Length: 510
Image (cartoon, rainbow, N blue to C red):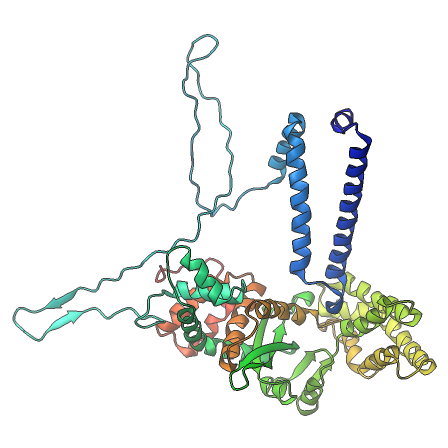
């Protein structure tokens, strides 16, 4: 404390300015924490985009780091203390990274005290993370030609290795890099072309687009098979989002739809790997999910979109509705001012989520038993309470709309009570929609219906890789290489992202 007091300025005006700046920074950090809490625990409509929150945190952390650096200049003891703390908390770097060692040794082994010979008693080892910028290289394939001295017309040469782009310059790994940059890192092709140009490699955006189109065409059977595998599951999540598509005839964009069908059984310990398949449609008609999910029979967890009701009426499909969508409507009312009925509804729904937090990861039977004991009484009390409040208020209000929204879907909202595999909400598939929104934000629109279909194919494989902890670039490189080299369609299941090995051997891919 004494050292801290000695560093403070003695001028009252300077001290006052420091206090004002500190209070403003504290208030800003408090606001960031509140928004992070909304982002972590709130519903989709109540959250801020994650990138905005991260940007605010980055700036706060930068300001803090600059303040530490300034204070350390005149306080060696403080600097030494923070360096020691940093060394203790930084962890270890991954063992698989290559190590390049540098020995920093003394100039002379003569003792500075007695001029005797020094002997080595140990060493200090420090590891730092280094990055080498992406490096382009050229793979040269030489195919010698052979002729017979006796036979004039005989020329023998090994066949050229198969390529994704016949006559083109990219390897399959290069194409995979372009795909991952576009659909996982959300970098439009023109930005990628600019990045490559900085390293002296001139690749036109249209050339990159040609590579993406050919790769998407090649990977369509994998996407189709993955969707078929999902449709064989007993339970799926479904959601949809807009996909702006350029409409050349009108000189503007039209609004297509990307439907997402996801499986994630991890909350109840299911053995099937998580996956998501996107399907593009030019509109949002109810016939679209009917066509996409032809042959599916089971539980479909959805939001309030009416097209799924049509599906349930035609197929052997049970609809489980989303409590997050119900809660969202009451939340919007409670945020605008005093709303005792909406606030009470939120408190009752929050009790359901507390139960879910306690049983997450347990087997379905345990989840069902816990819900019957703890959640069912909440549900049994909530329905008559909503009907009672609905009878007391004007039927034209937003509150009445929110109550009717819940009551009209009550059977589907209660389905989770009798089946431990069903989640309380549809957030699993909504999280799978967010990467599409980032790509849409950066690319603005797809160039055509075909481009939107390519988007669905590649994004399905990339996001399923991410769900399974697989490197999408390594997966796409190997999968494209296998297909180009004639991988049989009868063994397409080994090309599914979840079948990809954790540490593959790519002997045929440089």
